[in-house]
Length: 169
Image (cartoon, rainbow, N blue to C red; front, side, top):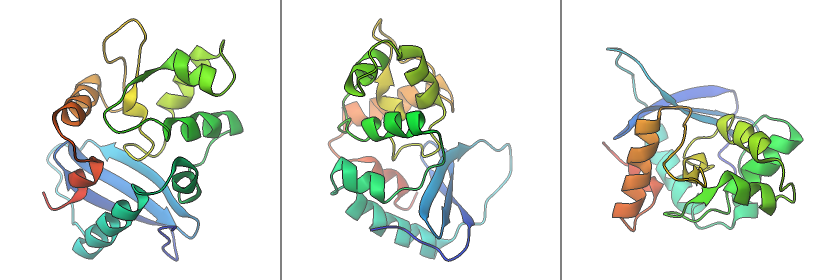
């Protein structure tokens, strides 16, 4: 269930939280990030949006191991271990950096877990926005704390999933 495109290709999709850049290639989906642009308009590929939304509906039904196998993020083995653990966080849930460190059997590696969470190349699909400080608040987010707060608020307010973000805006 890998979203494969013969060559490395970048796509841009508008979401309620901003423009998302999606990179695919022969090994699957490798990058999803928010692209903050000033007044720049994007040329959206409607066929890709449709294909991506269909892929997401299948992706969300997979267990964490199958979801991991359908992604192709670049990172260290430690980062990949953390990112695989993030796939276990259910929609609408929150976990602390310390809980992730315990889950990967590295209970003293909270800071390293935080660094790996911050380096996540596949936003939204590897749900780094669901990791929050144990002391409260939303903490930092690579694409702004305000965006993280809005994503968490969306998850609290609905029973849907992040697939809805990629349907026509």
